[in-house]
Image 1 (cartoon, rainbow, N blue to C red):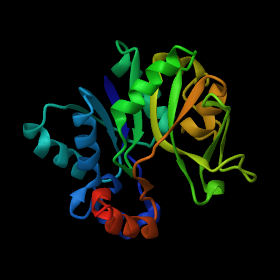
Image 2 (image 1 turned 45 degrees about the vertical axis):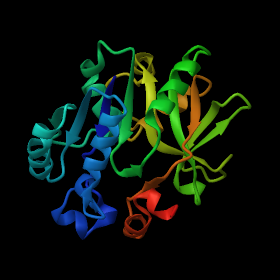
Image 3 (image 1 turned 60 degrees about the vertical axis):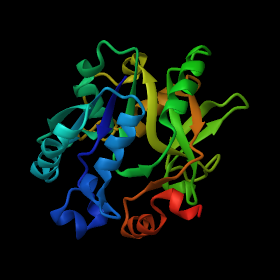
Length: 246
């Protein structure tokens, strides 16, 4: 199975760290976040990953070149001269998964030790019930700041809203998906999304259309968005999760 690992963001909320270090290379107790992700994908049986680059792309490319001799995971690095958005990157590189029935999409600015093979198995079972996409979910302390999913008793997502004023639940999008190629039939016509800027966002422009056709997978292991200085600092004391269990 192949994966998209979205890593091009500027990380403006992590400044001044991200003025000189790309967000995806922010160290977590000395280990770059991107290294943690690539190790997770490799041990989960992913064979090939496409990584998009933009902010401080030379650093990201140098990191990938340095590690390519010590991994069996094939990495395809794609530079974006302008940010395309999470959906825009996947759409622009859809030929990468042209031969795949199912594939992974993950945001590299999240820190997690999820059981990805278990999530893949769950997705395959959901496919039998008409599911197209399986979304990783976690219980958010501030649901108004997240994409929130409302589930029925069977685990099907019947409504999804980005940063709702009145959240229907506290189950938030963890930015990790297992999806079938049918996903592409739900992308808007053309390359532009609702923002009108040419940026296509999965959360705003694609996922709401999949209500009733996607399922939620609750991540019961560690997951944290390290997008703010406060959250990034917290991750340094929480990671690796095994340390907290001693």
